[in-house]
Image (cartoon, rainbow, N blue to C red; front, side):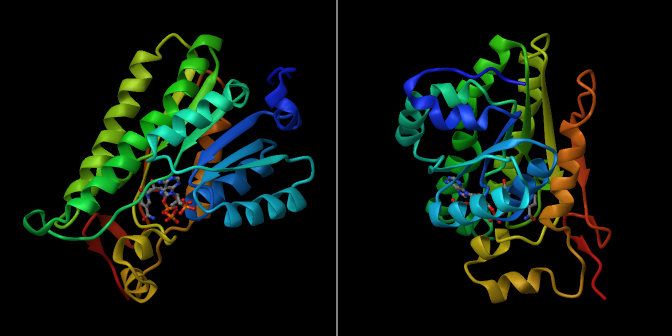
Length: 269
Ligand SMILES: NC(=O)c1ccc[n+]([C@@H]2O[C@H](COP(=O)([O-])OP(=O)(O)OC[C@H]3O[C@@H](n4cnc5c(N)ncnc54)[C@H](OP(=O)(O)O)[C@@H]3O)[C@@H](O)[C@H]2O)c1
């Protein structure tokens, strides 16, 4: 349990801080949203980050209604905008200091072009959000966790961070980076009592494919005649990890749907 503080910016935070605090990026949809609801059920208060504040406000209202005593703070932030991230971090150092569990979930894929046809804008946004965004958002929080010798970091990697597939070059590269960063965090934080888990899902039916392919009809085809994972399936695994006894660190979890044996190997009925 974290301590309350008295500084000016911390009125809202003191409300949040009556329970352990989970901060989740990309909580307006998919895995992040499901994880927010699951950790609320586990007794956490929440700080939820995404760009769509209107959606986050609806998520906040529903969670506070469904899980009595759970306080939710909605934060509008583009984690790829490093200036905005730094400004937010500076203004919210109190909030940063009380995070018990950080879920670095915000991320995306753009396009499926082969490397010879790759669009630079797509490549850049994936690197900016999945790698630079994750790092710039997480660093001050991890620093505080190390100093107070307590904390838990969950990174959303992917099976794409273990196995490359055609048309996935840069997305895979970013998720290989998330895997490397997870491993490095665990080693650098060794002795600091901070646990780090890399969650590596296969196909999960969220807004991910709509964002990647640009429209919902194409996205629906990705999951045609097979049963993908849901955001709730991944949230359940994250909840299981963070609720292990403090001496247990689940380092990595690779989770495929039963209908997917490997990145490009999908059974369709
Ligand atoms: N779905 C899959 O098959 C799958 C498989 C393996 C791994 N993953 C990983 O799981 C994570 C979550 O993806 P998902 O499947 O839940 O996709 P999703 O439904 O599209 O959710 C992505 C979330 O990230 C947020 N986000 C995107 N860019 C952002 C930015 N620049 N700043 C702040 N927030 C941002 C989005 O919110 P706003 O649009 O409101 O900002 C949204 O809440 C990602 O890291 C993804 O790579 C997904």
